[in-house]
Amino acid sequence: MDQTTRTLQLISLQHELAMAIGLDLALKPMLRQFLTVCMRRLPLRAVHVYFYHGDNNRMQFQNLSEKDLIPHYLTFPEVMKSSPHLVPDLAEYLNHVTQGLKTIQVDEKNSSRYYHLFGLEDLGNIIFECNTGFLEQSISYSLVPVMKRLQAGCRACIEHEYLQQEMHERKQMTAALKQAKNAALKAQKEAEMANHSKTRFLANMSHELRTPLNAIIGYSELLQEESEDIDAGFTGDCKKINAAGEYLLGLINDILDISKIEAGKMDFYPEYFEFDHLLNDVVNVIQPLLEKNANQLQIDMQGRIGQLYTDKTKLRQILFNLLSNASKFTQQGLIQLKVQALDKPEWFCLQVEDNGIGMDAEQLDKIFEAFTQADSSTTRNYGGTGLGLAITQQFVRMMGGDIQAQSEIGVGSCFSIELPSQLCLGSQTRQ
Image (cartoon, rainbow, N blue to C red; front, side):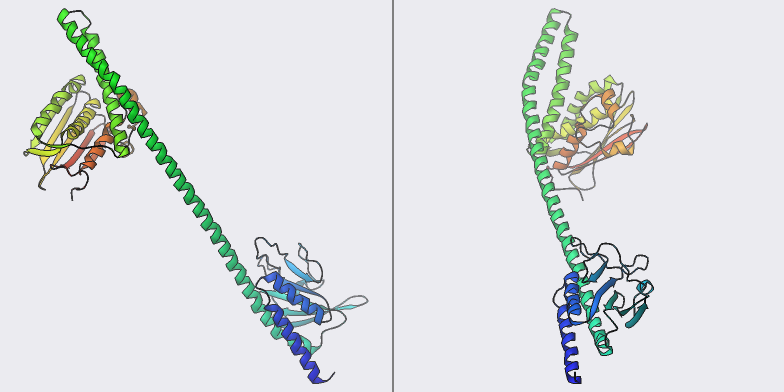
């Protein structure tokens, strides 16, 4: 065979191997194509591919695909195996990456084995196991640039599979986030529907309960008047019935108010009135609660408030809730009500301070939550539904004001409210 023909054959071999490298971006199919050409064009018994895995410095074929389980090494044309296989007597060469080209002859009793080791730099080694002797020097040398291209092709395949894996994980994450978002939206919708159902139920039940309660309260007042006229001796019982009815009606009114607030249907009816008149009304109503626990009420007027334009009923309820709360949690103590005109025009402050049982920081954090009291013992010892302060806070905010609370166990509590003298329904807050 002349030199020209030999050169053309080498060029043809290089070309076919180079084409096999560029046929696929998946590592295993690309290697299969490359090794098929090697086995067909070269006098080889087998080809072994070892990729550096990094575990115990062993050369292994790396598993790069999540679904396509690739063995640790690849031997062609034998069937790929799942357990690592080392070519006999070549273990020492497989503990590190071979640089360039090495030729190795392993002598046995009656024969010898001939190997060509091509290094793929930091990726691994590829081993040609020859049939009867080494490849011709011209062939082995012509394969060196091909192996460099194979190394670049393997690296490209690895990067591609990493990118594919990352894209797959991102798609899974996106799908999971979408599913979580849909679940959250569904849960939110169900919660809103349940909340609306609860609000409608509370409102309807409150109305249904208030009607017979008003009748009970009315008849108890009539019986009380008649018993006093005829001195029948059951006046005290009538008073108890009336007091119990009024207490229960107050609880129902609180439930109705909080349900209206949650449903966004709380109406305000502003009117002009003198604050002093409203304060006198509240003091007269709160007096029995003060006397019940032997408390004293001290009023400190710091400046004249004068005429207000706001919802008189809501402001009365705010002040009554704070004073009744202070009266309930104070025994034989002093309750102070400070009324102050603020420096900012058309703003005033109400401050209710007591020397009652007080609260710790944890209890203070949840006092404005609906149906919540300081702790379970508070409900047992003092009663109530835990709605008074929640309603007070909502009323204050809807009227454009703010409420703050301070407390210390065994010292007492202080609630401060700042409100505009002109009703703004939450559209204005104090700067």
